[in-house]
Length: 246
View 1 (cartoon, rainbow, N blue to C red):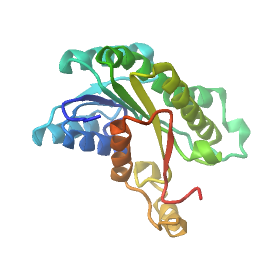
View 2 (view 1 turned 180 degrees about the vertical axis):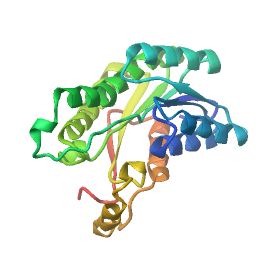
View 3 (view 1 turned 135 degrees about the vertical axis):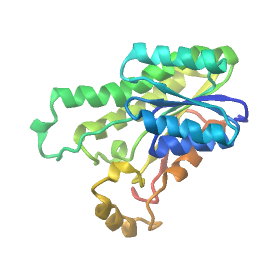
């Protein structure tokens, strides 16, 4: 798919991988809706960067864990840009909980992570799908994690939620075919603010990776764009982790 003149929604688009993806899409001539939940200043700055370079972007607030918010966000986007062709389900949250501390993984934690990381992606895909089907083409990329493959990560509920994202990708690919492609990009360690306060840990990890480097948000954004463009691929789980899981 030629991305030029397409319209994209990127959830959690104000920072990290989300921001890099918004900028990469804009460079390809895509009009971008930068979704945020709380990071208003970051999202507006991302949109401003795109608009100053001659692109088209708006920042839209919505809590993706709330279906009403999601539907209103997509309505606003369509009113502004006419349709939606591309969806990048990037918004995710975590809690840092030792795996052995099962009591700390409370019902509240499970619900919070699943509401954003899994149900939020489903709500966004469901709201965008009618417009993509009307256009007879569309593409969705969900952001997974190697935590969902290895069972490791910041917390047990986070790892399980990301494994669910991988399964959601395959199920949505079946549900939305043939008009809409759905794939999942699975990053390993990425140099974003998720490592805030743990930079030394990140530096120690890098030499142990096969490529001896931590991925950048731009690395992940390039693969997201490639997955959106690739018309012969759906339901795939694509890992980009500098060899971390080998």
